Image (tube, rainbow, N blue to C red; front, side, top):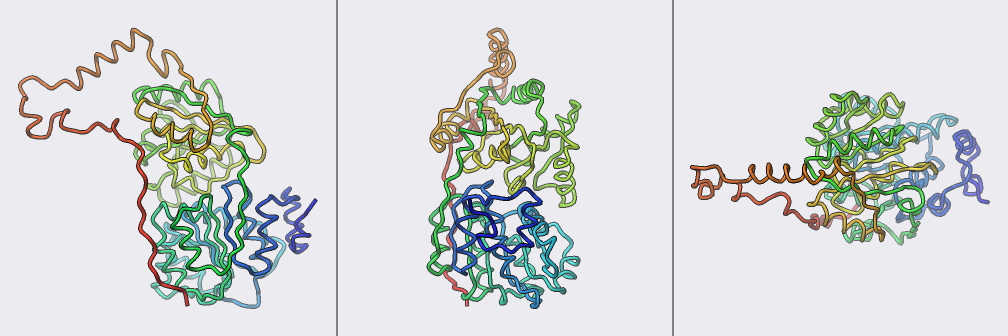
Amino acid sequence: MTDFLQLGIRKEIHHTLKSLGLVTPTPIQERTIPTALEGKDVIAQAQTGTGKTLAFVLPILEKIDINKSDVQALILTPTRELAQQITKEIKKMIENIEGVNVLAVYGGQDVTHQLKKLKGAQHIVVATPGRLLDHIRRGTIDLSTVEMLVLDEADQMLHMGFLPEVDDIIYETFSSRQTMLFSATMPNEIKSLAKKYMVEPEIIEVKAKKVTVEEIKQVVIETTDRRKQATLFHLIEEHRPFLAIIFCRTKIRAKKLYDALISNGYEADELHGDLTQAKREKAMKRFREAKVQFLVATDVAARGLDVEGVTHVYNYDIPHDVESYVHRIGRTGRAGGDGIAITLVAPKDLDFLRMIEKGINQTLDKQVIKGISIPDREDYQQERTEQINKTRRPQGRGDDRRRGTGPSSRRSTDDRRPQSKSTSSTRGRRSR
């Protein structure tokens, strides 16, 4: 059985790995580390949770020269949470190594504090594209010395519209660098980026473990928007999760649900883009330490979230693409533990549900909770009557439709269907 020493990892780091219970490399680590140590470019396709962070961190640490004070390795990530997570992993790995410095550069931090740190020797920089470009334009960081470049979760940078910024950043590096690209999926834009900036890359594809089948029990609860909150509270009382993440589609919906949880006496925190960096870090710390039981999050904020002990994931709002669904439910069932993922589905969500089932090649178990997720017959008639009365035009306002203010003049949000995302292509500049 292969161990990290056989892959070329030094004894000091191997000792640290063993102390953390990491003895056997994962498939992505076993295939990527030797190739990366040879200095070859790498394109690795692997899902979150496969150990890909150490697959690029360990080779970087082996090749850092502590006698040089320049930035030698740059790791680009789509979100600040993922930047923090990677930085934390690197700091664990260098506990028994003297002289290696790492700095996280992302939005929400005090720029002055970052500037002070950049004046010292920083061998590894872990950054989000926006804040890194800010430093480049200020002239406070020099990437011409970068020898190793990692693009982590490249497909998410594409979805978040960061590829033009990534293009500008790569332009600041020399073409002699080693480039490693990690992505769960390989859209055409990512393939074009790789072709543009990489030299004969080694392509490594690791099939994700069937977490959706073997490790995570998936359930769909049929409900209505009106009954979602009551249904969620009923499920929480029934399941009694140790730690649970509840995903909402928007920041507004996450905030509203968080307030409802607090009002009903639940220990909860929120994680979304409207919070300051300090509040987001505090929320993550409290959740990791199990001081709160529930974390209400949006997809972007939860990127890179890796917390042991998450027993349940609740999709309060169904995700609108397959990748987001797989990412969400992958937050539970970590480290070989059991996990449960529950998705609340209203009638308007059926197209998205069918898309997800097709994407994961699985028909999900569908359930109803009579009187809770769906009304009893008598309650249904009453709800239906109330809904009809709400949508009926008020008497004496026959000009509503002409003015464009009546209910019939607006297209119902229930008519929405999944749409493909359009993204701008990267510009044609080449690195020096």
